Length: 376
Image (cartoon, rainbow, N blue to C red; front, side):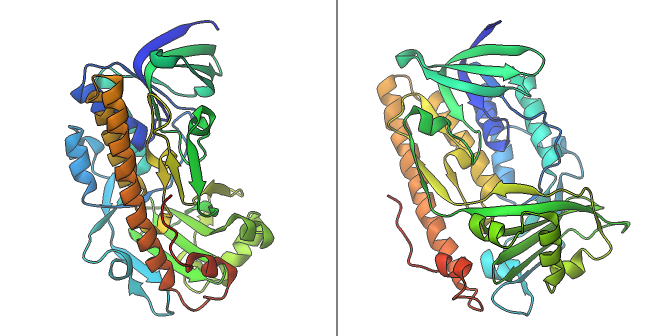
C-alpha cells in the first residue's frame, strides 16, 4: 500500500443514496466522511421520474432547488401506460393517483449533490474501486482500494455505509444476507431525436415477455428500456442489438414513439432491476442504503426517493449512536423500518402486475401474479 487515509465514516458509492448519507453526516454531525466511487462520474445516466416529495429531502439536506439549475427538474408533460389494455391510460391513474411527477436530469442532479459534499468538507475519490473490506473489530474497517493513476491505498473507518448498488457483495462478504425475489433485468439504449424540443413524456407498454419504458432525458435525448427476466432476455436474444431492435419494431406504441430518432451507439446497456431485501443487523458498524439495502422493481418509481431517504436515515442512525449498544438498537429500528416499507412495496408490486391480465399465463406475468411472499 502506497498511502493510507482515515475517516469516521466511509461511504462506498457516490450515487444519490451515498451522497445523501454524506451530506446528512457533514451537515448534522462533526464526523469526517470519505466517499469512493468506482466510476469517473461522466457516464450518461438513465433519467428518473420522481414526485414532488423529493424536494422535502433536498430541503433536509439544506440544498436550494435553484442550485440544481433550471433544467434539472422537468415537469412531466405526458405520461401514458398501455398496461392491461390496448387503450392508453394516464400512468398516474394506474400507479400513483393525483401525483405530479418530474423527470430528473440525473447527471446534473448527482453532480450537484457531490459538489455540496465537497463544499461541506467531505472527501471524494472518483475512479476508486473497493478491492477488499476487512473488519477490525470495534475499531471499524479497513477498505483496500485501487485507483488507475494513484494505485493502491487503504482507508480505515469507524463506520461503513454501503451505497454500492444492486450488485453489492460487500454486505454478504461481512455476514449480511440478501433475499432475491426475481431477476428482472433492464436492457436499453439512448436515442437522439431531431425534434427541436422533445416532449417531456414517459411511455410504458407491456407485452407477452415484459414491458417497455421510455422517457425524455433532455430536449433531444431519450432512453428506451425493455424489462424482462434475465433468462427470458437471453432466450429471446434481447441482449443483442439485432434482437432488441426487432422486438422494439414489433411493439405497437414504443416503436412509433422512437420513429425518426437514432440510437447514440450500436451497443446496449444491461442492468439488474430485480427485487431484493437485505438483513444486516448482525454486522457491526455496517449499514447498507439504497439498492444495497433493498431494491425495488422500477415500475414502482421508488428508486431515487427511497435511495436518498435511506441515506439520510442511515446517517442519522450513526449520528445518534453514542455507544455501540445504541448503534445496534438504532440499526434494528432502521432494519425494521425498511422491512415495513418493503412489505408495503411487495403488495403494491403485486397489484401493479395483476392489472395486466392479457398474458397472465405467460411465464413473465405468471411469476409476478402469484401470492405475495412475506418478508422473512
